[in-house]
Amino acid sequence: MDLTYEAKYHQLEEQHWWFASRRDAVYDLVKSLNLSASAAILEIGCSGGPLMQRLRTAGYTDITGIDVSEPAIELAQARGVPHVSVMDGAALEFGDARFDLVIASDVLEHIGDEGKALREWARVLKPGGQLLVFVPAHAYLWSEHDVVNHHFRRYSRHGLVAALTQAGLRAQRSSFWNAAMYFPTAALRLGRRLLAGPASSEPKAGATGDLHHFAGPANTLLLLWVKAENRLLRYFNLPLGVSVFALAQKPA
Image 1 (cartoon, rainbow, N blue to C red):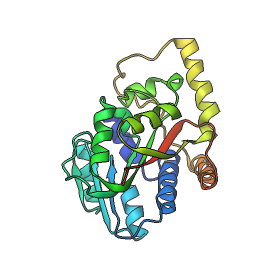
Image 2 (tube, rainbow, N blue to C red):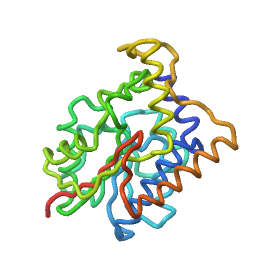
Image 3 (cartoon, rainbow, N blue to C red):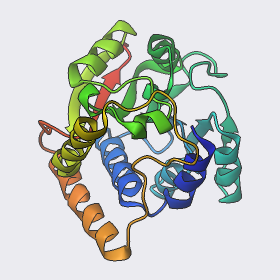
Image 4 (cartoon, rainbow, N blue to C red):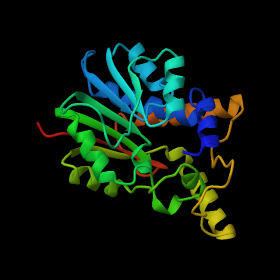
C-alpha cells in the first residue's frame, strides 16, 4: 500500500463511513454464525484493530490479528489491542487447524497468488471452521484507486466463489455489498475512463485514490444508509454493489 494512502487510511479508519459500515457488516455476519465466546478468531489485515476491539467488546475472548504493515500493528498496539503481529497473509505462522473463523476484509485482492493465500487460510481453519472474505467487485470498476492500493484484481461473485472452491472450501453464501454507492461509483469511474483513458499502471506520488475525508453530516448519512443495507443482508443477498463477500466452510 502506498505510504501516503496508508497514513490517511489509519487517520480515517475509525470514523469514515466506508470503513465503519464495512466493520458493521462483518460484525453482523460474525454474530449470525452463533459462535461461542471462546471461539478462536483470526483477522487477516487487522490494520489498527477497530474490528478486533468491537469483537472483544461483544464478548469474544480469543481474537488474533495480523497485518503485513508494521505501522498498522504499531497503531493497534498503541490502541491497546492485544494479540496482534506483523505477518504475511499468504504465509501464516500458525499451526494447522488453529481457528474457528478467519476474517479477511479487502485483503485477497492485494495478494498476487490468491490460490496460495486461500489454501493457507483454509489450512489454519479447524474442520468445519469458516472463512469470511470481502473483496472489491467488478473488473470494469478498475480505477486509479485500485492502482494506489496495489490491487491485483477485482472480483465477480462467481469468481470469488470459484477461487474458494479451488482452495477446498465450500461456499455457503455470497453477496454483493454496498449497493448504495454502486451507481455513483460506476458513473464516476466509467466517466473518468471515457474522458481520460484507462488508469495508469503505477500510482502517482501522494495519490490517495477515492479515499476522502467527509464532513460530519455527509459521513453520518452515508454510514446510516449502508448500515440499513447491512440489516437487509440478514434476510437476502444484494444483487449489486461495489464489493462482494463470501462465507465459506472447511469440510469437517
